[in-house]
Amino acid sequence: MNVMQGVVLVLGLGLATSSHPAAQESATAPTTASSSKPARAVLVDAQNRTVGEARFQETPHGVLLRLALTQAPPGVHAIHLHNVGRCDGPTFESAGEHFAPVRHQHGFLKADGPHAGDLPNIEVPSSGQLIVEYLVRDVTIGAGPATLFDGDGSALVIHEGKDDYLSNPAGNSGDRIACGPLVR
Image (cartoon, rainbow, N blue to C red; front, side, top):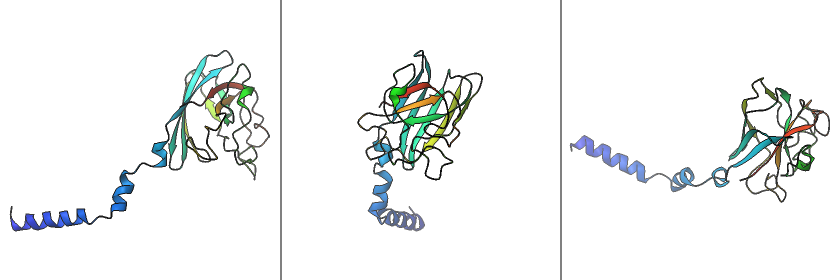
């Protein structure tokens, strides 16, 4: 080893050992996002046929929802998180109202909205297959007041029509045509 290589090695070791321990800890410490187990919901229609699946992953900014539909009816449909983890067909009314722990009004166009469970409409092509992702900011699958895993769970529901983002209680979106309770 020549003198120059020795100086570079010593300088490099000095920089590596003088790093602030908190910075090293934060890079390796588990975050809230990684401590929550992912969740999923298998969506079925009124005839109990599987139409797709949703996966839920906690992130530092909310819950990432990935919806993969395989046999959904074509058209524009409302999709919402509902406050009860039950999907008794054929009407799926057992899923309750929209998930709204803060009690905002329904709709993106309302000044005092939206519900935490309000999601943008989906447009399913004629193939019945669609993959979309949403970042749902006002919910968690971990512990807390906005958890989707409270005492009675939550469900993901697809409606017959589109959400007008204004009308109560469900944006004039029609019947519930598919539903899936969230599970770990």
